[in-house]
Image (cartoon, rainbow, N blue to C red; front, top):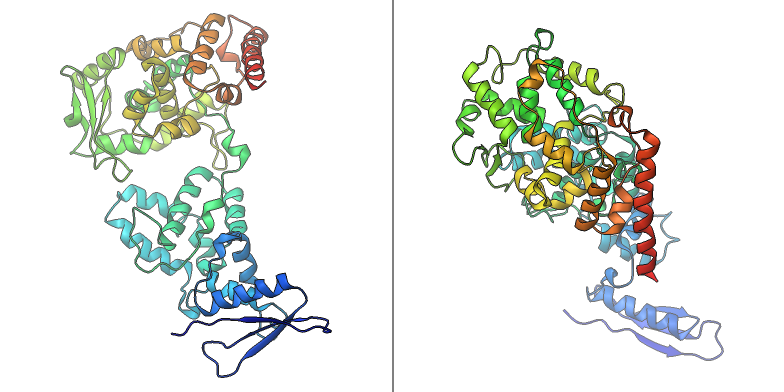
Length: 481
C-alpha cells in the first residue's frame, strides 16, 4: 500500500494563502484545502498523513475519556447534522469509538457471557452476590436497570451517577469495574478474546468522598459481652455460640453459616492440637486465587470451642441454628440499634463482627501483616475499609478481647473495664508509629458514644485526643517548613 504524502504551498495575495494538497489512498483525484497560517497547514498535513497511513495515536495529546464522550454525540446524529463537524472530529470518533456498528450487542448479552466465564472460576456465593449488585436479581442491579443499553453508551459520568445513587457502593463499584474491565479485554482474571470496548469508562469512576471517609463501625468489649449474654437464651435460640465464632474468626454471617452447614467443613477443620487453629480451605473463600489460611484459636476462645464441642448442639448450636437470619437481625437491633442505623437503606452494623475482629487483631498482634494473613484481605484494603482508628478499641482492650472474654459472659452480666485516658494516648502513639501522620490525622475520630466512657467524661476524652493530635499537627507543620 502506497504512503500518502500531503504538500504545502504558499500563494501570496489570498486570504488563506497556504494550500494543503494530497491524493487519498482510495481516490483517483487530488484533494485541496486552504489554511490561514503555516501552523494550521502543518497541523492539517500531519492529521491527513496519520489518518491515511493508519498511524494516528490520539493518546499523545488528548484525554481519551473526554473525547469519547463527545464522539458519542456525533455517533447518534444524522449524517446531515454531522456535516458541520470537522473531518478531524469525525476521524477521532471513528478511531476511538467505532466498534463495528450494529455488531455491538446490548449489555445484558455481554453480562450473560461474562457469567458463563465466571461460573467455572468463582464460588456460587460470589455469582449470587454479583447478580444482586449488577446482574438481574437486585432491584437496582445495573443490568436489571440498563440491560438494553449498549456498552458504548455508558459514559464515565453515567456510571459515576449510578454508583453515587445506590447503596453498597464499595461492592457495587468493585463488581461493575470487573465487568467493564472484562468487556474492554483488560481483565487478568477472566479472558475475553472479543472485547467490545476500546476504553474502559470505569477507570475514572470513584467512591463518593462522603462514603470513603465514613468510619468503620466496631463493637466495644462491653457490647460484645452483653450480646453473648442476650443471645444465650431461648428467645434467641441460643445463637451466642455462632456470634462468638464470628467475632473470634472474622467470618461474615453467610460464611459462618456455610462453614457449619457443610459436612466438608465444621469440626473437621477445627484443630485443638498445638498450635490450636481453624483451617479455612482454599475453595471455601470467595476470592479467586486466595490461599488456604489458618486462624489461630486464642486462649479465651479456645476454652469456648472445647465446651461447644463437648456439650453438643443442644446447648451450644453451631451446625443447626433455627431461624438464624431472623435471630441475627433481632440481636443486632437490640445491641446496636440505639447508636447505629440498621435498615434496608443504610446499615452501619453490616459486617460489624469482621470489623471488630480485624481492628482488635491489628492492635493485639502488633502488625497489620498478621491481620492481613488471618483475614485473607490485603493490607491496603484493611486500612481503607476495615480497621477503626477512633480509639473505641485500644491496645489494652484488644488484649482483653482475646484473653479475658470467655464462657462466663454466656451466663452472667460482665462489667468490662472502661477505657482510660492513658490507653487512648498509648493507642494514638501506636497508630503514629505504624502509619504516616497524615493518615493518623485523617482517620482518628473524636466522636464517642456514652457506653465508651462512663468513668471519664466525654469532654475529658475528647480533650485528651485533641491535645495529642495537636502535637502531631505542630510536628507535621515543622516538617513541611
